Length: 403
View 1 (spheres, rainbow, N blue to C red):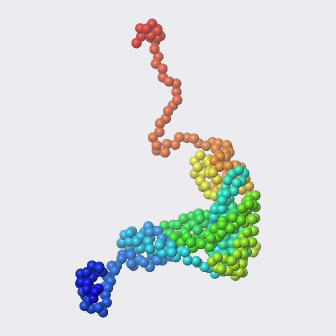
View 2: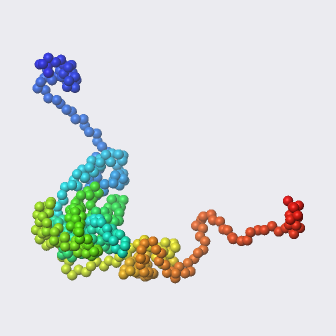
View 3: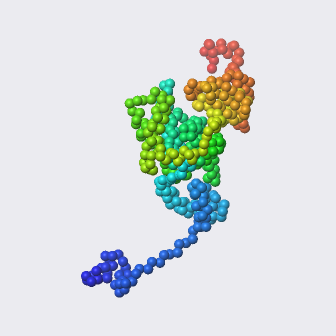
């Protein structure tokens, strides 16, 4: 630009540099720019970063929980410093989640429910749920349809899958379904459903949950649910199943005749070829009896002597009001137990929102007044008060002289 006759001021305006900078490099063409990076101020969070990385690896991503734990360890910084540090970590977790996670033979299976549609039984329409159990290495799958996602159903379908595959993997991965886990405690640790955890110990597998912000770590089985919808359900067009049993018969035939014989889109190997390695690495189950589970739930008896079960109310002896009882449905009957004692038995209500009552349960129930410290009014019903007058008063009214 200088050789073309432009002035330093013109060059400065065209390039956006200061005139002194332009003059400097015209005088010293070989000079190189020097960038001095300012020293980064130390953050109050720096000495806690190794601890935070450890907690994130354990699945604790709540800023409130982490802040409380840091305070206990002497952290003097604010909440915003922590959230600013967490934000890119969470974004990175979303990116990492899309990477395919592979497991060796026999190590892992993944389980999920998927909505498959609805089914009409006895004039009532109910949702149809698909249970999909997929081995991580071979992608060998088992799929069954059910009318609910309750714990008893989940356990029975697990055992059916173990029987079909001939063994149990070392661990099974789940999303955060309430039949598997109850909550996360204040330290961010998983509180497992005790019945499900006992079931896992009985069959010898370790349950695992998808991490928060890592939804795609269970991608194999979620792809299996989509595969059932897009392939099997489409194949049903023109031949509608007669009921749930017929639907499951057709689903099982499709699983073993189509799904488990295909060349998998990710591994590019047939499922059957990898299955040989998977099946010999599973834990054997020969001769093991089913897990002893009774379909019962813990409920609290209301003050009026009723307990709620599947949308209806069932009576119990009034002396158990306020106590925790176990309710069990079996063969069209509802049994209610207090500890090991059966305290009530009823026929199951034919539909929801009914009251099933045994009159003897509420005989002698005390109905005494309970103020509970409240200000109450007591009204006694009686005949209205009537003023008594002498007869001559009425005679004067009749003659028109009364006021």
